[in-house]
Image (cartoon, rainbow over all chains, first blue to last red; front, side, top):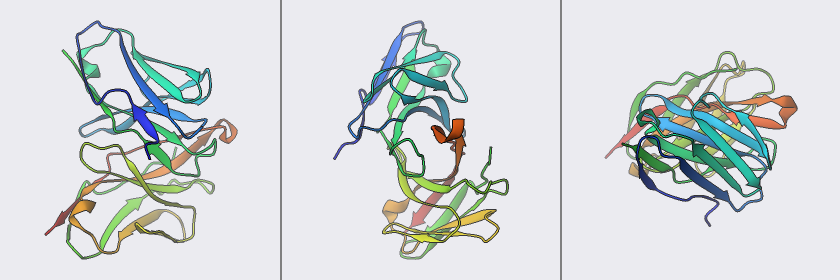
Length: 114
Length: 114
């Protein structure tokens, strides 16, 4: 019954490392999103993609990039991890191109940068 | 972008109805109201959404005021497992609807008490 899968539940990385967070959805959806969640700040949108090889910046894209080479996979990349990127990262995918439907979320990846 | 305002926290006795308010006074005519919840250490879960009519499903009811400036999520018989952060979200549609994003606020922490 799993719909959105994030590759890791917990990650610990060193400052300056390049970090890849992977998200896979098995519902053939067009849209995929990456959020980060921090205490007191709620969920903030980093990047989203509405089609293969298409991407759009969200509200806090600085320090991140994304890759969507296949429809089912949306990767978030931290080019040079920093301690302020320690956070919970959540991937989401809504049904279809029209957001007038529910979105499915992964279980999240808790990233710690030391 | 339409924004939402929710109380930071609420308590509810187990078995009683939980009524969670949300203000969205700048909502535009074609924007939907969504509710999600997030149980600790899990990804957000879709609950319900609506445009202007009241909606009900197996999880909850959504009451939207006639002027659409506010709404209330009702959990008819709250259980301990309903303890979670509840997010009220207004869908933002851009680029002609081809891309959309869900903007999350900080939500309401509902604590169901035994």
